[in-house]
Length: 142
Image (cartoon, rainbow, N blue to C red; front, side, top):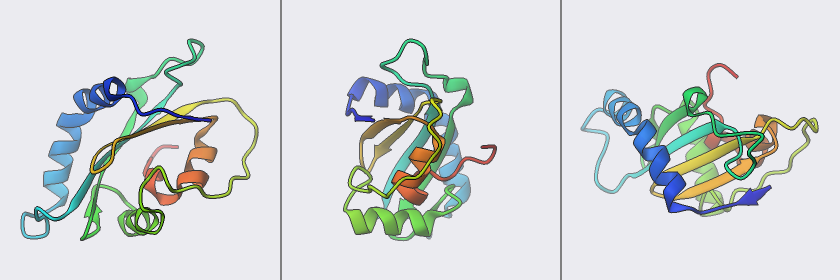
């Protein structure tokens, strides 16, 4: 697994998901609960690996969520657990849970923008969910 921090990929993630995440954030967070001190993360899980031509990124199958911390909320179904994990580790990049997953190569790439710019590709969804805990555990159909 590799960690890559590339502005171009993150800007692409924002361009593809910004309308969806912006609308979702406003629908999920009443103005009274969202203040300027809140940490707001745009999150996306995209099937594929940007560095492996056998597994191109499939943005049509991407899952997205908005996570706000202080207070926990947004469209993320496990906002409290995700914010607690980020708080304990100091960042999404710092979260490094143990993994025990099947060795199936079906890569997924996790992106974050906003409060933290982050990108990392994992061998499969199991590795992502176990390593990064609740932060990227928001997919409804997988």
